[in-house]
Image 1 (cartoon, helix red, strand yellow):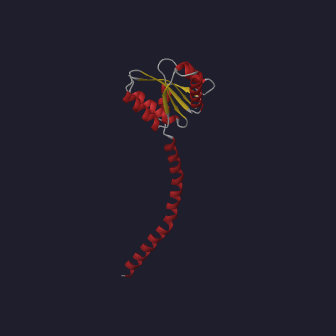
Image 2 (tube, one colour):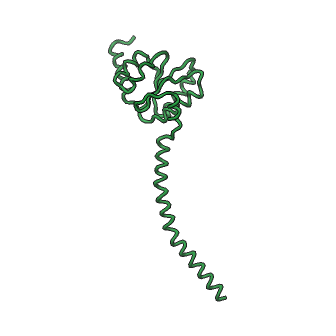
Image 3 (tube, one colour):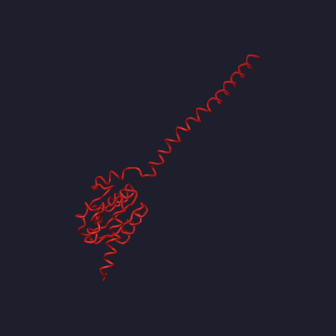
Length: 177
């Protein structure tokens, strides 16, 4: 049994996690096997998120004064919290994918993305967005493509001059022969 100081330490740690999260998803599950739980945890870890089953009373107290405060009334029944400090898209993709693959054991309660409470429909639309890395690579491609076009145009002038010179030489040889 935990004493009062240990409980306060757990409460402070959970409140700190809630404060540092950019995105959070509350989920519920029933009849989840260890294999499915490990699969979900692995997918969330790959997405850069943390996942933990929480005590509802502790979570309600920890959410006070944090971005998760609007979700406090959802801490009922079996509740797990997935938190992401950086990437709401990656977290949304992982939760959406697992929810679709396991609808009988896993259900989505509510989510929070950058301070806004979202439902499952909105989480699925967020999940359809490209990841941050994909967007950055597209921007860099667009920046780089202009430089590539400029180089191609600059290389065309000497290449075309060489082609025209060769055609003139071939024409003069044909006239001389």
